[in-house]
Amino acid sequence: GLGEFRIRDLNDEINKLLREKRHWENQISDLGGPHYRRYGPRMFDAEGREVPGNRGYKYFGAAKDLPGVRELFEQEPPPPPKKTRAELMKDIDADYYGYRDDDDGILLPLEEKAEKLAIQRAVEEWNSAKGGSKTAEKDDDEPDIYGSDAYITRDPEQQTKEDPMGLLGPRFTAHVPV
Image (cartoon, rainbow, N blue to C red; front, side, top):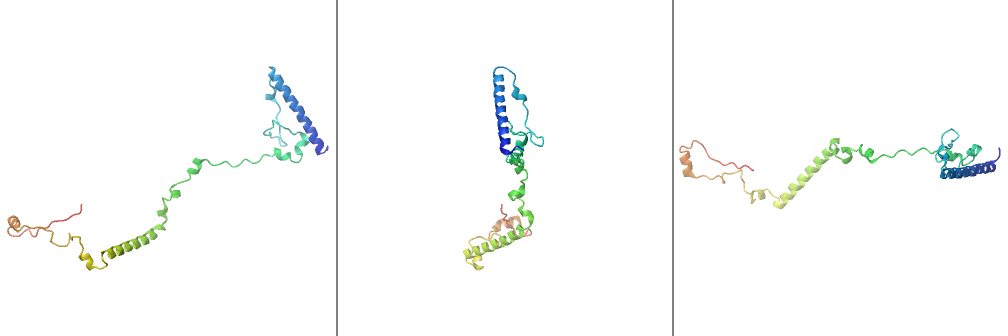
């Protein structure tokens, strides 16, 4: 072979001639002649594939096999396509937001235990606020609306007029929360 430096010199000389040719083609098109650059030859690599970006410096023959030049002809694999926002969002469902956490059966026993503890604490607080004994419950200021006839108002004269023989039985008033 010719050697690496001689091959590079010959390749440089060919590129200078191509640059001069391009200047003449531009001059011809400026003067109204045909546009030869549209139909120019394309640059191919060793496997016959067209080289991308072949508008600048070109390598011919043995110059393609020089160290550092072959890497220029080898294309890097394209990066994997990035997912769009819509593609990322299409796989998100209620599990992602935590709406189906109750379905796994783990939370229910824990919630029952916590609920019992909370009820026990609330009852203890209420009892301590009322005095802590059961006698305090009877001395409440709250009226007992279910247990006695104290709130049933009876007029004995009117009762004898409506039921003179007492056959209808005692009258009562039902207290229903609304």
